[in-house]
Length: 296
Image 1 (cartoon, rainbow, N blue to C red):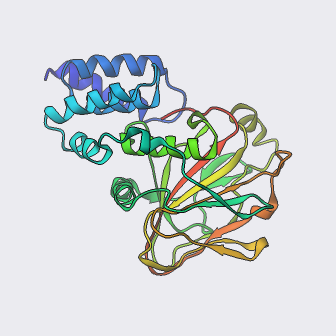
Image 2: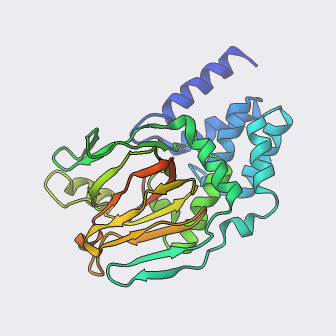
């Protein structure tokens, strides 16, 4: 491996790991060139790029090909992804059955949305990514730390994603009927014993500070959660104004619309992430907007 290839991949990783708009077409072309040059990290990234359709036509077949080549080059990550995904792509992305829990506001569940093996995979992928979870500051329209939230979060950028996670996103999209292009970055929350997220709303409150973001990216109109484990006590998702506490088993999903049928913020969706009284809770969180997002 030449020093030039390594240096180019390091620059590419810095680019896609940053914050803000990126030239997706450059990323796709540079990633493919480095992968063809034999860089294993670029092969893994090329698989993500192909599976997402990031700066190129979306192709799961190309993603699988890059993973196969990376595995042949000695990548344990690529081999593990191929083993987990298997040859069941259609099953991975197929929509799951849902049922209504509350009609107004609109809250539903999907039992058995993910299998235990996929849940365990996502926990282990998210474990090293954990950082202090932030809250959205309506005055600055930026995230910040606050005592109202003590849990941690691991967020998957283009670099941290993998094929199983991308296929889970597609399953969510097909189940909910919203294109994955409107998804924010996938996150996995970790609540250790006693950690909580105080009562809050997931929608963005329209204001002079948030109107520009709402105009560009749309309202966060839907929240989709998947319970990745059940080795904890309490830790429910508590909808305070409805006096309803909900908690799923391993792989069960909970989703709710943060706006009403007119598109206005629905204040009945106020909720808290209640603290586990024993053990730790792992929860996949996917926020869905009304407009396309910056992918990866």
